Length: 356
Image 1: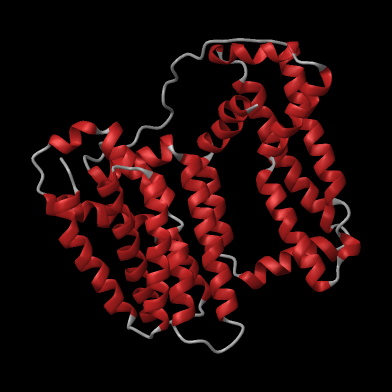
Image 2: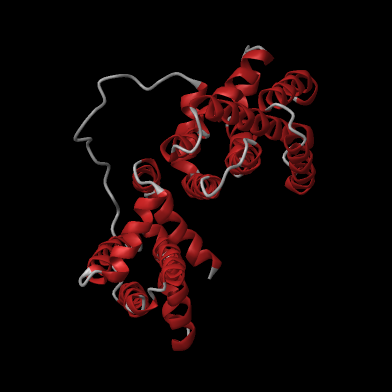
């Protein structure tokens, strides 16, 4: 079952990472919390609201189904056809789990609809989502069952590019790192950014409900920025295991630490844009929180070098470190001063912890 999900569902989100990033940019970059709520109320109350929602969900499900049928044609997926040997009930259960894996974005939005319906007492219009889930699961599960009983293999030929970029590929360590993240770690990238952006949005919505000082968003957004730690760990893996020869290049340590700051500064831009779009904070406050989040995330990344990527030892340190950071914020120490402390610590510890 784990193999089935890994080579099919994970591959879908990996290959469609760019599409999901565009959707995230649209949903969190252009729509505010009030607009998300208005769309949810429309789906729950309008006469054809649930029909529109069902049509959107159907298009997504057809995309998943087409991907599944095409993917299992590849020669490297011949092992999938051994699923015909499974007992009928086991096959139904596993293909149902497979379908749920594809429908994760729809399930998450369904949870949001349930929360809005309970809050606004609109439960009467909620019931169609459950038949929708049942039918969509049958569609994907049925497509999987049909494919294993109708095997068709082909070898994909190399395609000629319809459009060729007019410029050469950038010779930049930062570009190569981000390109590797998109191509090889798309699922991790999506999960990390989705969690961070949702937590940022939730923090700022709560901040807007009453009169609070900067300490509340400082704690909330620091945690949101730290949710990128999985992406940061993949960057460590990229440098330590994938791009090994990069460590032998004649590059100074200070230039290397500058690259680390730059790539992490780019990674946390989406959450920052969410806070800009929300409008609850001033530009100077957003700048302070951005610098704090960047310094904390880079300090956490640096700790991977000290522990040589041992996550069990790192997670405990991150937990106690965040508790200490929270105490510093609650004692009204200026945010920029805390960020400066983390930057100074990073610059002092990097030459001792980084091993070429």
